Image (tube, rainbow, N blue to C red; front, top):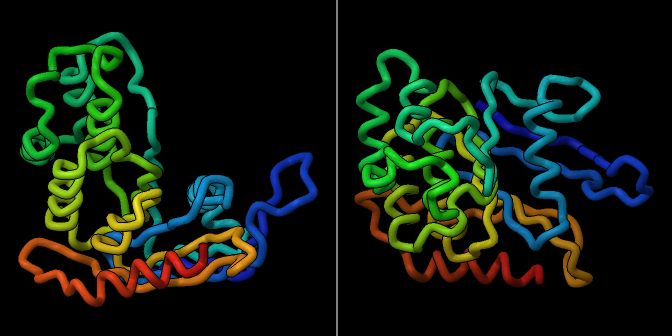
Length: 230
């Protein structure tokens, strides 16, 4: 699998300034990779382009081996008035009931399965929404602040579990959390508008997973390399 951009440029309709300009990067490894940067640098625009234009030659995007791309975002709502448990039952493909139960347990959502989506906290809503994507068939799942409003300990539990349960899938994790990105992701695309280092560059994260010993010195070095752009 390979996710690449070669000279990608994107301008909002009606605007002259490009939000993405001559973007070049390559990610070739399953697991968690990331896009990091402040608000307004084009993280979400890039995510939507990967979904909607991935197979168009003019988009300058290549997605070799990534035929099924899904996009999950913060504060996305579930449709309908039924309970969240009923909704998960409806969207769960045949043969994935065991995975559904495991994800509900890991995400700590068993107590709210009888509640409507609107009755959940924002963190619970994001977790419930992410489960329905993880139950589908995908090669690349983009998580655009999909674990926002989830406490740090549970967020780490979820990320490590996803890495264990889906070792052959690629994830593109969009987050404002520098420590989280540097710790759990491998290839990190950093987007910056800073005068100090404007544009984009790649940083190697620590790709921490269950059973690994975190190299604190290397972890700090990854964070400092990212911070140096701002």
